[in-house]
Image: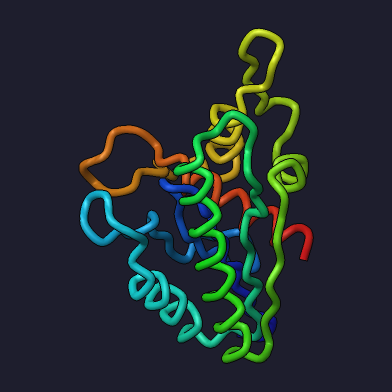
Length: 177
């Protein structure tokens, strides 16, 4: 398929995800951040396998996207450390893969940037005088992919925040890059 592009996006949070959209914004595949054991570190082998499976679809171009998160005020040291470790691992993995797959690029996209790019006014869910970012992202995702449940697996009942965010990061990347 000429002009076939894939957008592989990562939400680096503890409950993050990897998502792949095609050039038309159609979901190709996704996975919640895999862990070694219930509380162990990220299983990088599974993340690499996910990316290689997407690369084996032979797209003309791959755009890798990582949410550009930073340390947050009032967040514990261990949570901040875990977030930065995940972001660093994803950066290394995407950088390595972009060296292997020559027609690719790597972009960091700040939360405010991807939110501004994909959210519409009708998506906004207010909590007191503040936008509830998680509920707004879910409303936006439901608008963009109305048939999706955003569940981690068949046993889950609640949409996975990492999957929702990663899908929106990929969609923002598709619109921007």
